[in-house]
Length: 295
Image (cartoon, helix red, strand yellow):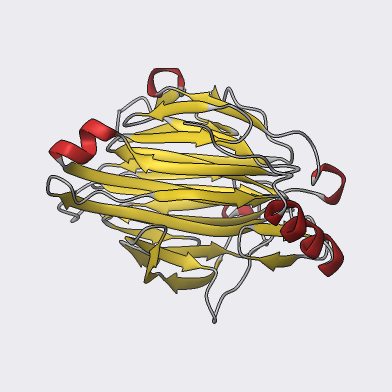
C-alpha cells in the first residue's frame, strides 16, 4: 500500500457534556451547534465512564423512535431494554445491540436492577445511524450480539486488537446486517503500535478516542480522549498510531458509512425526510399507534 492512498485529517471535534434520559451524563461530539450532522450518522454519545454508588444509576425511560437505527455498545455495566413490540433484553459488558426503529417503537433503556442496587462502573456508546428513505417505515427489528460472538482479531505481534461490530478488519467479518454499508470497529493499540485500515473513498469516516492519545492520518495529527477525528474522503485507508513513548494503550472506535445524500428533518427521537412525515410521527406516537411497553 502506498502513502498516496491514506486519508488526511479534516478536523478534530471536542465532545461536550450533556444530560440525557432521567439525568445521566454523556459526552457528545455531535450533534451540537458547531457540528450538527455527519451523513449517515446522526448522533454519537459516550455514557461514562463513571463509577456509580448504589442507587445512582439512571437510564432512559419510555421514549419513541422512528426512521433510524441505534447501535448500543456496552463496555461496562448492565443495561435492560424493553419496547412496545415485545422485545426485552439484557446487555452485559462487551455486548452490542443493533436496533432498527423503522416505522416506530416506544423504547426503554434502564440499568439492570441488580446493577442499580449495587452500583459499579458504567461505560457505553450509542450511535444513531440514519435509514435511507426507502427503509424509513420498515418493521422494527433487533440484532443482539453477545460479547463472545463479536469477532475479534489481532495483528501477528499482538500489538493491535480489533472487535468487529460492523464491517471487516484484520480478516475478521462482523455477524450483523446493516441497512446501509457501515464500518464499526473497536481498536486497541499498544504503545508503539500502528495500523492501516481500509475504508472506501466514498465513505464518511471518523474515529472517536475512548482512552489514550493517538496520531491520525497522513499528518499524524494528535487526537485525545473524548475527541472525534474526522477523515477527509481523499484516500482509501485510515492510518492510526499510538506513539512509542505512550504510557498506556490507545482505545478507539473507527466508524464509517456511505452518505445517503437525502433530506434530513429531525424532531427529538424522530428522523424523517419531510416535515409532514415528522408531524405524522408525532401524531402516531401521541395517539398510541407506536404501541406501549408492558410490564
